[in-house]
Amino acid sequence: MAPALDRPGHWGPPTSTLDWCEENYAVSYYIAEFWNTVSNLIMILPPICGAIQTVKDKLETRYLMAFLGLAAVGMGSWCFHMTLKYEMQLLDELPMIYGCSVFVYCLYECFKNRNSYNYLLLVLLMLFSVIVTTVYLLWKEPVFHQVMYGVLVGFLVLRSVYIVTWVYPWLRGLAYTSLGLFLIGFLLWNVDNIFCDTWRDVRQKMPPVLGAVTQFHAWWHILTGLGSYLHILFSLYTRTLYLKYRPKVKFLYGMWPVIMVESSKRQ
Image: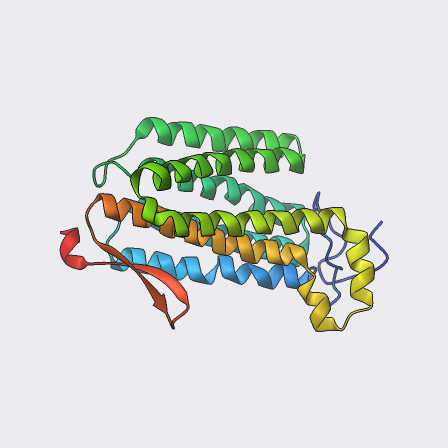
């Protein structure tokens, strides 16, 4: 049975194994979880811009895949929260594993010659992704997916700490900002899950704008989307420094960070 505050909507009753704390169809008849849906824009638009810049700068395909992987997670999450259908849930959760596997490959291969490939690591990450996918399709337990995703994030954290401790300490700010945003998002994700009933009651007494601010799962999207984007920038900056491309961080419209690479250094 759906919680009392949920309403019927265009996509019918949820079939997903997860139904988050945001009230269903409270804002739009056509979008099950409105704020959890639109908050995914931060995981879609900036990575697409990053992918375009990667192509313009003629950088390695792995970083194009990293940006597009993050955008795919955002689009899958959009479809999931808009419909709350099981098929769309898989479109959200499985790309998280695939995209994070690309992140792992990029970060662990950042000190190799240009256009070199570690086929053993590629096979291991692909095998890991296939096993996780198969098990998750057979055993529809969200905690399993969350733990496997956490394992990949753990490898990223360890590698990032190594890089900023022993190789490029001046990148500490970028690496720790990315990690900090992710951890804050994870904290809010847990608050949303644990205290859902409380927050739903509180929202009923708030003006709509303030109620939207308390949608902590939406904040999880925003913070982890930004943290993941900054992680790709950190990985790309590390890689281009090693290749002596002289990367520079610039801010579009004075606020959004991108990495620019001197064309003369890529020949």
